[in-house]
Image (cartoon, rainbow, N blue to C red; front, side, top):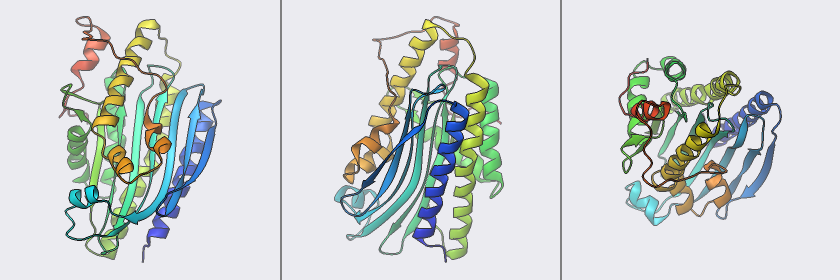
Length: 298
């Protein structure tokens, strides 16, 4: 029987693997770890890397926390009565030094209620400062491969979900080139639970080879002040999404989670320019033209 402790232990190991891969590829930065306790039960390890050769700021968080479901979460989950919860997972956000290297986010998680209900969620999405179509196609091919090992219906379904989720309605643009996103995958029995967990493992284990490839491929590309200024604006969009729309941020704050860990996803520096309009036919304008839903990358 697959227990919540087994799942949490896997996520703990996954955090180690991802941190090692990023440190080895960066060549300079090292993760600083904070171990913390949740006020109602459990805790986690927040690991942050700063001032690296390739990574300006990044976080790889592991948590396994428990407590009573809040009123807000009870309403969101449509629970008729109070329940206790257990939540565990790994979340990753990396903000690179170079505007030619994309931002990346991953989350894989498991949630269990004391009434016996449980589900998995997660996904990976890519947020380039400049959309390179070949990189976007390659990235989506890796996501499709991770999905296809388990069910060929997963990729188109979860790709569409990502397009709709990683979207800034107030800007009418996607956060990046998407990826895959899934939530509330509830197993019908123990066999289905093992199958879903295997899928989540495939997603989690695809992160390090995918991102370290993009780090190594793009970090030496030339750039100047114009590209850095654009990077600051795109980071600003990232902040807007995480603070206004992101479910994980809202869940963490609603459950009185550790604020520093919740907000580790924010970049070290960002900028907002009033009514910024890129030059027609510029690289910046071309990128905005590709921040749309429903682009068929594979």
